[in-house]
Length: 154
Image 1 (tube, rainbow, N blue to C red):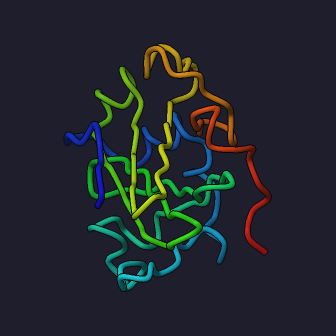
Image 2: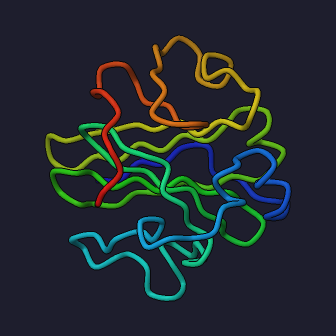
């Protein structure tokens, strides 16, 4: 089962790079989303329409790994559950992203994870209410109960 939240539409890539500096960096092999067990992944069109050349690795927890990418005029957060390699993604437009950030929740069997991507200057508590968030990396947060941030894949 896959659940995604905050999906809307509108604005370009350069404004997103101002909000999420990782998007302004050159892409490396680590930045490419690996194929999930269901066959989804980078194939030239990316995950769910996300441009494969736009993805950047943001970090991970003990439960999931995260990438940011662009789908036309939308910013997207991609999540891969470590235990199952199932992928989930959610996208939103620039206006909604600046106001509320972007969350994605993916569930597979007994494994579930949530990630929250926020623009520079937005407090995760302002974006997601009562949840207690821990920083995974710049702009990326996870619920405190999902484990400590982990090193990027080698």
